Length: 257
Ligand SMILES: NC(=O)c1ccc[n+]([C@@H]2O[C@H](COP(=O)([O-])OP(=O)(O)OC[C@H]3O[C@@H](n4cnc5c(N)ncnc54)[C@H](O)[C@@H]3O)[C@@H](O)[C@H]2O)c1
Image 1 (cartoon, helix red, strand yellow):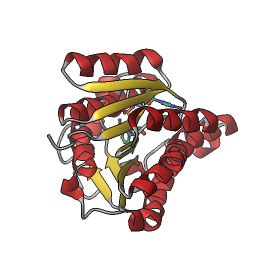
Image 2: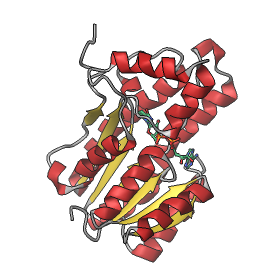
Image 3: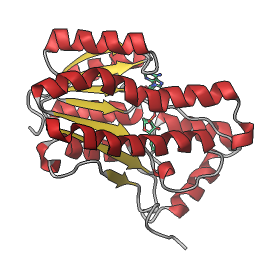
């Protein structure tokens, strides 16, 4: 049990990577606080964890809403007395070149993906600083490091999250708080399945194209990222601080010519 008795808060844990991570953290002994804007999916994650013998609770919250995030973190602290792990995972994307992105879409992606990391961290950090321990995992993406077609707004947010992670680590290292980032490549989650459906006439052809750019020859699965999140959440990564961790089938550093 690598996370025995830890209180772990995961945003966007009703689906995909967040859900897979919640289930893995629970198996490793954590009490997992599932947060999501989607109540039905969040509650479903809790039910699955409980059916498996794990411990979890659900809080409905939009990570971009300051009042809601502050109230949720306060409620979590009141109920569970501490937050050991915060995984800022919730995120959204659109498809489009910069000139095709409408200002309201730009603002919403920035709000969910960047403000959605800032807000839960802002309200959880004072408690972590007081308890002189904590782990924060921020969800970036390989899009922070490589140019991807038609992902202007999304890439900007994930680059911001990576830079924010490094800045946060410097400020909170004196409080025994570690802050690291995950940089997944293409992971077959509902997020990507939806993107493939809406962007291509034939999603299967698109998947074959993505597989070709991977050294692994395949897309990742949410469980691949969950295992990396577990490593960052556990003491096994105690010497990792402000680091990007790639889970990408070789897409960033390899070249599949
Ligand atoms: N799937 C990939 O290939 C991939 C690659 C790199 C990074 N990521 C990042 O991983 C994270 C999770 O992606 P996923 O693939 O599991 O997606 P997903 O769509 O399956 O899950 C995202 C979850 O976030 C929730 N969410 C969305 N907006 C929210 C908000 N405002 N407040 C609270 N919850 C909200 C959704 O309801 C959903 O449950 C995202 O930040 C994404 O950018 C994904």
